[in-house]
Image (cartoon, rainbow, N blue to C red; front, top):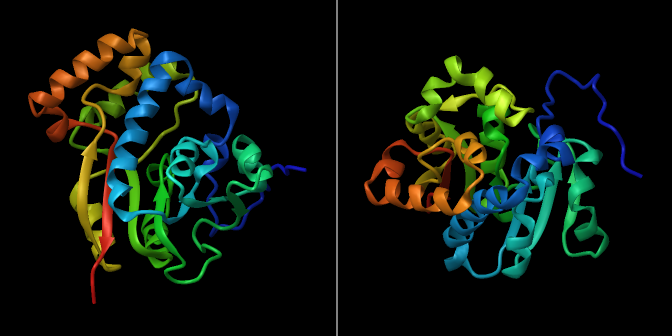
Length: 249
């Protein structure tokens, strides 16, 4: 039976994935626009992993279920870690069918050995971690070859967040405050744990909230293709998927 998270959690624990693992959060990616947004994320992610063959993947905070189907279709062995047992709800069917594993534990003290997984992924999480440097340390510790994370970049429309947050919240309903990063500060954090940036892939030039308002995925595809061709997405796009690889010793 799924448990509800203990809100009286220790001060050294963080649980932002409890919200992203809910059906309410998944509604932000419902409909044809939502499917398109997730397809861009999935295609980018699988492309970054395609040269590695079959992998042992740890998806930290992956209870949202946005990556699991793509990973399994590629034959990867997947473990999902959530901060609470309730984070399993949206991936329970895969667990019941023994197609993946789910564990819950402290996101700042991952319950795994050093370099236990070939690749560690974590999406919809880093920008909501207060102690994000400790989180980076932990996902690097358990990754043998590579880490993939997504984040909100300051060099994008996110720079307007302090002024436009109320509008974004009205559009999306359950928007949370989040931390935006400079590429350099993230690279420095990962480099301190022996990981170097290999790929940086901005997903969209326009904020996803704009595409949700348009409700016209065909138009969104055309617009984003044009922005990418002009180089605007590479320079100003967000969210960004980063692939970092362990330095060879």
